[in-house]
Image (cartoon, rainbow, N blue to C red; front, side):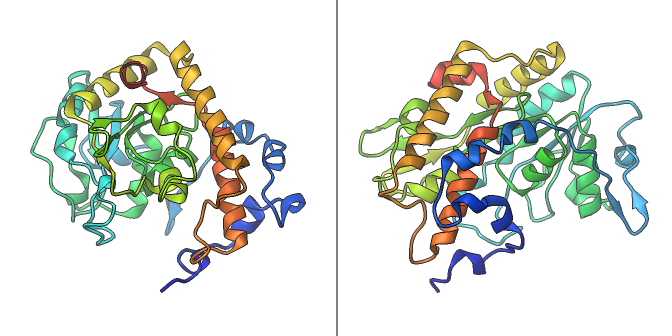
Length: 326
């Protein structure tokens, strides 16, 4: 059914957040910039997670067998089982086995890895200092939040759990990124993208070419900005074992050095990405949404949300990955 998007998801309060009063009938980039979103998102929020009288005390990981004072990484790689959506945008569901070399790099440095998710996922092989948590008796939504809040960094894709990791101001390394609106928010965040292959041109697009696509292209608007590009000509290819492993090594060194400065290429990428985003937002001749499923208010909300995401993205792609594929 071609129902408006407002019928698909809970939306209480979304209008108050994304539709400023001075642009209630029309999108305004200026009204977004006035709110200084990047400064708001850089402020750490003190979270207290509680359920039925239980409060996260910082030691939940010890119940899983992680020794006191040991550090651990939360790993989440989306599967199709939770939503029962196999065959629908499968580029969101990369192969967990491609993460095994990266997992071993973490454990070789003395860390532990806690794999998050649900028991519909493919189990991991047994490895030292690795906990396949969805298959333990401790699995719960409360524990999911506690583990994410206490990990050294969150490693995974652009999934629902990522939103809580952001809310908790965690160090985040994104892999298999497909939507270029959902970039690392904090300056400590890094990521690597999936590769986009053009069947027509018989080659992979560079990152710069991907950012240069425009609204006139088939299925570009909402798909490319938020959910990945949906076009018969293009095929997503997930990150390789080597790419994920190199990204993890670079990120662990980055955190150990406690140096959050960006390279010249990372700065160039961020400037270009924001400029291209502003270009898309300024093109009022093409909608971001389909008028069959989204009303005018939905259109304003999506444009405002995308503009806000542009302004708040202070992290960057991993340096080595960006140098190779820019």
